[in-house]
Image (cartoon, rainbow, N blue to C red):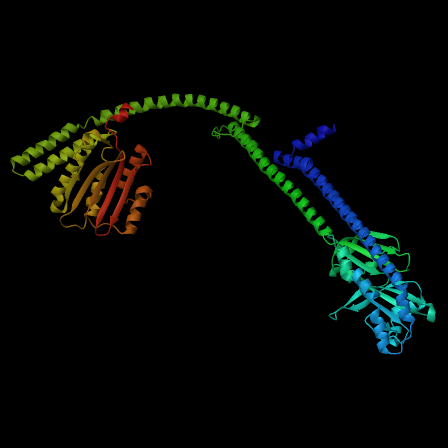
Length: 599
């Protein structure tokens, strides 16, 4: 029952929307769900990787730091038990020169500094006033006694670590790690204090062999070593978890977050607690970059699939709509449906069946129309017979005989001009009457008619009209066909308009030649010509004649006859220049007379 309800709901929705719903349920939701899981899982794996990397590096740093501090403690113990140093510190000297000589004679400090590069500087502070100030031995003055490290050294016999500002050879001060240890002098019931300063360069060389950044500091004190200045002012001590624990995860710095590990360690000989932080500045940027790439890929997949579904659904919907509209037209009695329907699927087959049905209906209707046309043709034939019976009452021979009678009387009266004019007129009328009902005439007959027409105009206008015909010498004009009465309107237009302002020496030149299986008939007059605007207007009248205009109607009719008979590749071309004349070129196929009958 549920399935039937779902199907009923789908059948009430258009096909295009059905495809959208299927895409959303079958593709969009799964892709979003799986994609988000993959992105989340990838972020978790990368975060775990960087945390493990930070933890491993932190263990390495702690191990190196423990080894460094133990080594310095051993060096301090060794120096404190050196009998020569003890003898130097407990002896009483009579003069500064004697004490200076004694200090210069002791080479234990120089040997220690040369053998151990981890020690940048060492100092011994003593209460023995007979010892003067030296390079390594100093008096405990009132100012020294006010130092924090001295107050702590005077109260405890256990070695301890502090961070002190130490100046290098160039006078630049920096915070360095120092070990303070007592040198016991029971001979004089006193003690001296040994200070060993750890070389920051040595720490850097030992620790900085990875891409992670390291920060070192003492419990409750400032940072004495930092490989990246960005973390030097941060409160990393807030992430320290007691003397033995560690923190692993997200660490918030000044303006951004990093992945890091903060741990603590203590030494067996001291109560001081060291803190070490291993920070990965590239972790979150790389994780975010991978996340953006995965999200971009996810969006690209959704975009491509959505675009494909959108294009396919529109294409499929249009095909269904086309089929439905065609069926609707057929049901309404309109059988003018599209002939092509792309595809080879079931919809295409349904449309093909519909098209077969429509064609069958059209054939049946065509047979009915043919029967009606035959009946109409019988009626038209009867009307034509009646028209011929009426037209036969006017016999053309009566007209020719009458003109011949007038010509003979003119010759007897000695009026040769009238006789010639009547003869030319009769010849011209005979050609017109004989070719009114014919489809084609020979080029020779058409040109003979044009010459007759020009001869009549010559009698009328005298020297205003002169004409000549130019044809190739090897061209037989009787072999080529032409539509009858095609040239006379152009020649008449040249005389009436082209030579209108010419008083004498007017010329009509007809040039005929064949090129590339086309017949070119050029009719030139040396009349007034036309401006570019007038020529453009005449061309418009030839090709697209306004119904309300009577200008160039003859040229328009000629162009239409040529196009209807031969096709759009043929017609008329006009050229003209003001005061230089006008050239009308007619382009026809060079067909032999009678060939269309054979075809």
